[in-house]
Figure 1 (cartoon, helix red, strand yellow):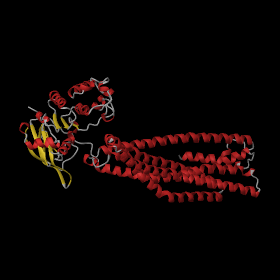
Figure 2 (spheres, helix red, strand yellow; figure 1 turned 45 degrees about the vertical axis):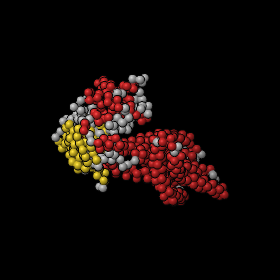
Figure 3 (spheres, one colour; figure 1 turned 180 degrees about the horizontal axis):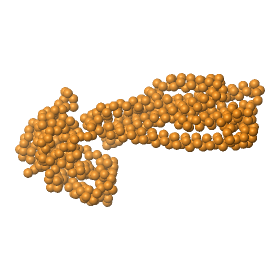
Figure 4 (cartoon, one colour; figure 1 turned 120 degrees about the vertical axis):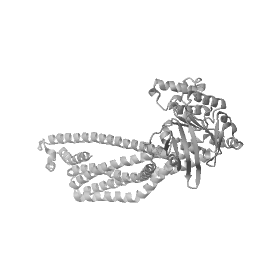
Length: 571
């Protein structure tokens, strides 16, 4: 970049002698001794050709260098952008689950895709400002060398005007940047909420409500965007006006003084060239500073986000544990805040291959228990014992836990890709065979046999091309593909009819007899497949026993409150 600036200085320095040579005026050539090497100063044509060749070479070098500098700068900023997005993305997904649920995923998306772009834009602008500042410094030196007093006055006026304008607009641009960040977040939120609420919007005719909030956010966004885009251009307009006025005034003074214009042509061309280059540079410097001020809000947002990620970052080098014989839950306690205990002194024992049942009213702590077993949450008190080894949490068991929620999220890919979460061409023959077996076990073939592309059928956004029960079956197959030792079905068959549920569970039992299943259900009929039930009430184990003698209060809890059940293997 420094070399680029010196090339610019050389070009500017050669303008006066080149114009003088064109006028057969070689008196100014000795002043630029370095430019007269290897040429005959007494031959005007030789001087013109030589200087023309040198200028052409320098302009060519400058053009190529400018392209390469811009190319490298774009590559650098894009790499920084990729690193920011990936680090932010990894950081969000590595948050503690209990902390992750406190945040809004729309904010995550906005920060990853929009805020990072604003920050990278500010980095790009900073690099351009440094480059333009170096070039402006070179041009200033050239002007001072030509006429110190006149140039000093002109440069001081430019600098004063730029600083004054920046001071006046700094607060406005910063506030506009904050508004842009906030309106981007609102736009992301309302667009997402609208598309996810399409059924309610159509049935309840509530489009006006969502549209009102979206339009309000759009107006805030547009107003801030206009402020950030328009005001940085004002210096250019003012500078061009003042310079043009100055040139007209100078021309009038020359005309009045009756001085020969011919002798002033090289100097006029020099000043015109330098000022023509200097005005955009000064404008870019002032505009970039204003744009950087507007981007400060985005920079602050990312700074805060990375601080949060650093504070809550979950260590990746978690120790691996085994589950070959049994898993015990000992004195487990958990609460989301100090005043509300969700689980109180839970004690359970799960043998390898068991299907144990737990029922309870809504809010009794069933989902929290499942999340603790999955290792998503960490108990406040209590511990686990896996194969006789005491562990604080089950994160070390996550590699062998399969979890299927009630709302399975399917990618807009093929059924095969949704089961394997792999690119189809990376699957081995053995893995493809296992997928076919899972399609039989999970009763997926029941509907894929009727599809032209079978497992290669695309499911659509969120699985829109499939029914709710079909989506859940694909979700179960996805978890079984990893061959877990423990499968948790969190109401994962709620949308499947009873006959299909029975077929799936029987097929899993026959095909995977050692698999331990934790199943969350609200169906009374599901209890027929259970031989032991545990009732949780207000975060405590209120009752446990054989499935054949379930007390009436437990049955009412299941029937009226859609309680959760953890099934235990039948004899």
